[in-house]
Length: 93
Image (cartoon, rainbow, N blue to C red; front, side):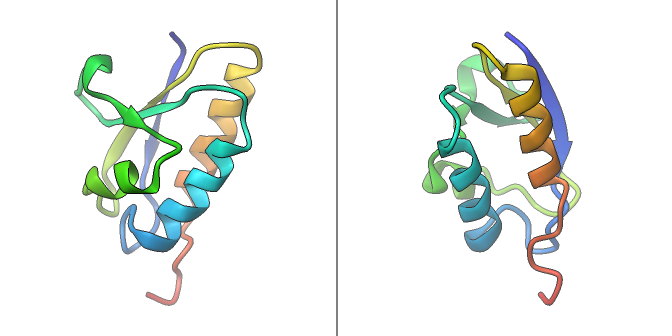
């Protein structure tokens, strides 16, 4: 299963607004995408389309997460999702 790592760029971490933006992008895809802290096995990964799952990660600014997906267009989709996570969506926070 293809995977990519991303470093959380939002200063508030993966909470409320950044989680909502990311989940919205995941939900646009016809792929099942999972997310987990770096070093966590695929069996412990969470649904990346769920805002609650994203917030329950407790990912802070600078934390590294692993995105995994499988299916047509996975490489392009994961590259886009990494860009979303590596953008500060709360620059005023």
